[in-house]
Length: 99
Image (cartoon, rainbow, N blue to C red; front, side):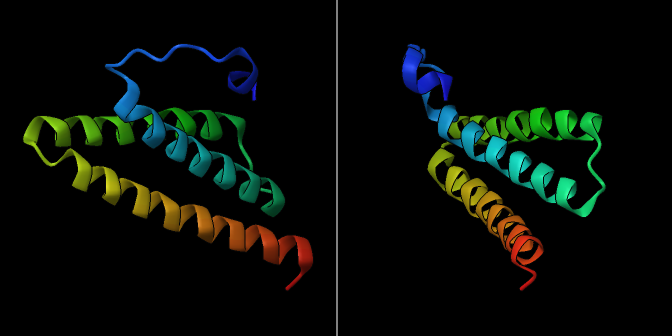
């Protein structure tokens, strides 16, 4: 939210990895929300999950760029994390609406 108002400049070197990092962070946030609703949330686990998701996703895309298959690995990361996000969103919906 802060980024929308502050409009920070992102270095060109980091630009290809930013969308992947955001999707990885969203995966951690939805996982944390699901864990909170299930009553098993642990703050240390959330922080480690958040940081490791972002770093691992960015490293996968970085390696893909170095190997010349960055677009394919970016797509793969987005698909995998997207599936996890929608799975967590479905679990949250079931918990909230009891359906």
